[in-house]
Amino acid sequence: MKRYNLLRNLLIIIVISIISSCNDKKVYESVDGIVADAAVSVTSINVENLKDKIDNGEMILLIDVREPNEFNAGYIPGAVNIPRGVLEFKISNEAFWESAMLYMPLTDEEIIVYCKKGKRSILAADVLQKLGYTNITFLEGGWKKWELTYPLMYEKNLDHNSHEDAGEVGGC
Image (cartoon, rainbow, N blue to C red; front, side, top):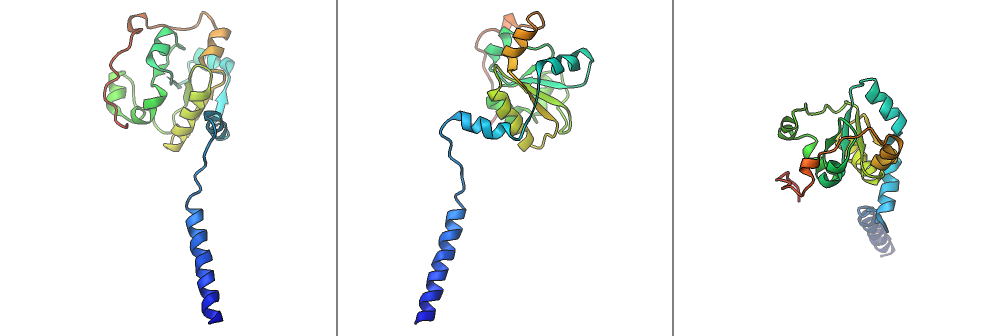
C-alpha cells in the first residue's frame, strides 16, 4: 500500500510538472517590455553609418515600416515602404516585389529597417530574423533622427498623401 501511494504521488508530481512546463508563455505589462526583449537579439546602425552606406553605393535594402501616410510625408531616399503590420506577409511575396519593380530579397541580403523613432523597427528586425533573414539591422532613432541629422536629404510622395486601399495581403 505504501508503495502504491508513493508511485501515485510520484506520478501526480510528474504530470503536474509536465503540465506547468507547457505554459511558459511570457506576459508583458506593456509594449515596452516586448520591444526591450526584441532589442536584445537585433543589431542597430546609426544614421551616420547608414548615410555612409548610401553615399558609397552599398547594396542595401532599406525598408520603412511606418504607415503609408507617414512614409509619403517624408522618407529616406531609396526606402521601400512595407508597414510593420504587413511586413511578414509582403517580405517574401514575389507579386509585391514585382509591383515595386524590385527583386525579392534573399535571406542573407543586408536589410535595414526603420520607423519613426525605433520601436516598430526593432520589432520588425526581430520578426525578419525569426523568418530566417540573417543580415538585419534597425536604424537607431529612426526617421526622426535621420530628419534632424540630414534635414535636406529626404524624399516625399505628395501625390499619395491620402488613405489608399491597402489591398489584400493575407493574415488577419
